Amino acid sequence: MALELLPTDTLAHRQRAGRPFVTLSYAQSLDGCIAARPDQPLALSGPASLKLTHQLRAAHDAILVGIGTILADNPRLNVRLVSGQDPQPVIVDSRLRCPPDAKLLRQSRLPWLATGPQPDPTRQQALAAAGARILSLPTQANGYVNLAALLDCLGDLNINSLMVEGGARIITSFLSEQLADYLVLTVTPTLLGGLRAVNKLETTSRLRAMRYKPLGEDMIISGYLNWE
Ligand SMILES: NC(=O)c1ccc[n+]([C@@H]2O[C@H](COP(=O)([O-])OP(=O)(O)OC[C@H]3O[C@@H](n4cnc5c(N)ncnc54)[C@H](OP(=O)(O)O)[C@@H]3O)[C@@H](O)[C@H]2O)c1
Image 1 (cartoon, protein in one colour):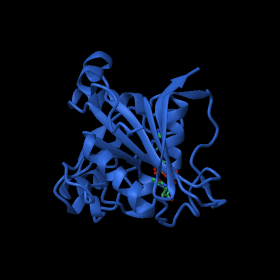
Image 2 (tube, protein in one colour):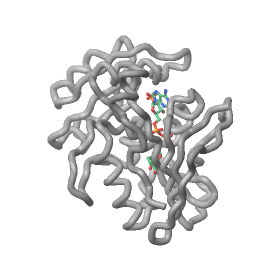
Image 3 (cartoon, rainbow, N blue to C red):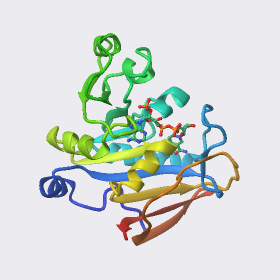
Image 4 (cartoon, rainbow, N blue to C red):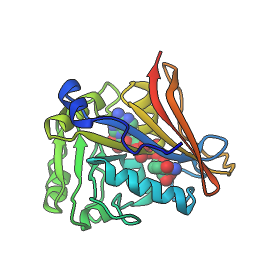
């Protein structure tokens, strides 16, 4: 069965919900890890599933990662392996730790940084001068950016569809807060014993309208997240 890159009318979704349709997409090992070590980049996906990731990026209006992923991998988050438009990069960064010379600040589609209500003025100035747009948002008790408020803000900025790529803390937050609508999971034939993709969840979910497809040596599993 063919995989759907965007299984819904995302404009209608945003008009109805006031927020973008959220696809959570990441690659994990057989033992549920997304990295061998949190601070080291690791290419997990095979060439065919990497191409699928780029197709997914091109199909979404925006792409989101946490600051941990920026600091560990310094990714570009753009579309290179297929033809298509780059999504708008969004970094969740409550303390504005993003380095002003990150790769994301050296390409045409400059990132939006989702941070807290009172960003450090010096960091804000340096990042704004480097081309980032600062989205100042409420935070939670633990200091993390309020992701529901961020989704509302992205809806106001006409983002109909958002792809969330990681890392572990961001994946766990989107799942715990039931903010992801659709999952596209790449399972690679590896055992890592490293950084687990999902930590403690308050709720459980079962995929609806699930599809699975072998792609090269990987397995792609997708479906709607149905919260219980
Ligand atoms: N296999 C894959 O598909 C894949 C994809 C992406 C990343 N990764 C891997 O994931 C690892 C990084 O994961 P990570 O967990 O360390 O970092 P992360 O999830 O990328 O970023 C987490 C950081 O984001 C900030 N944050 C702000 N608000 C948040 C919220 N509401 N929920 C969660 N985080 C919030 C926090 O830092 P502040 O408190 O400073 O704001 C937090 O420490 C790297 O090893 C990377 O290679 C793998």
